[in-house]
Picture 1 (cartoon, rainbow, N blue to C red):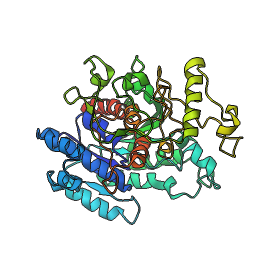
Picture 2 (picture 1 turned 135 degrees about the vertical axis):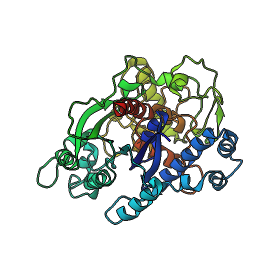
Picture 3 (picture 1 turned 180 degrees about the vertical axis):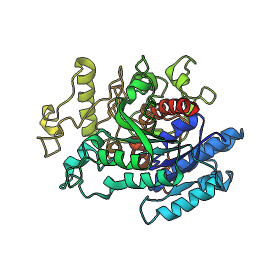
Picture 4 (picture 1 turned 180 degrees about the horizontal axis):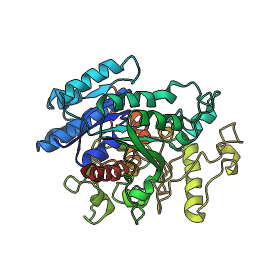
Length: 420
């Protein structure tokens, strides 16, 4: 079965996907968002069907020929039930531990991965909250993470979070990060951390995150972080084969892609499968006419002059917001010849900060385009609670995810150090 890991605060399982692609085996995922849990279950189904050469069942599901319930009925029940839709708290821990113990059946865990929700540590979250997020229960989720370390004693753990983690303080003025390190050390873990930018590891996106890696011993001489790659991946590299769409067009079902060679980044990275030549969720949101006017102005300014649109420079009839003192960059074009700016969960609210660079398409990003910037494979299907396609749910999951290719780089390095 290979190296076993547990994914906590799993989201849509972007971090997990990178470890799976590197040969690790997930024994369970724990996530509080119900829609994300369905996404993980569908991905679990995908991996099992691939291993059993039963891809036609998955294809039938993505094409709408069978229901989600019919898809799951083809998968061993224990795999579907390994996705735990639970909020991690003191009250839920006994039940979560019991279910994980049952799955493990006495086997050891090699690794725990995951990062608690980042809103409590993010600079934006703290600036918008009247109390600066002090007293928010999400500040203390790392304590529960440590309880998993205490119980299962994995050889390593990987903890991911936003840069604000390094500066967030509690009510007494103490850094949460320092408290984390002290707690992890108490449970026997030597820890190292670095700020990694996803664009340095084959991701077409500038996305900086704190990666904390712990090792179960007192040995400080270990290097658990991957080497940077020399080449930079651009947005053009991941958009080149997608059908052109206008606002409101597309589908969540598979669409045929333009032919590409096996030497392209898309093929080499595994984002695109040359066997199926299809991608799900190339679906765009509709836009109001005034927003489309703004998009054209913003895209023209960026493509011709390499300048960002400032809200107050718009014609008066297009300025519909009363606030003209802050968030003046609320309309932003995704650069095509370089890595994208950071994709965050706000993309689920509107697309103004993620305008497509092709002025002829004149729209915000499709779900699949956002997923590709986060390096999700084209076979990755994003679910909702009801089972009906939801752009909002998909965008939220994508924006909250760890880029798969970054996760894979970390996973490959962890495999190396585990073998030492």
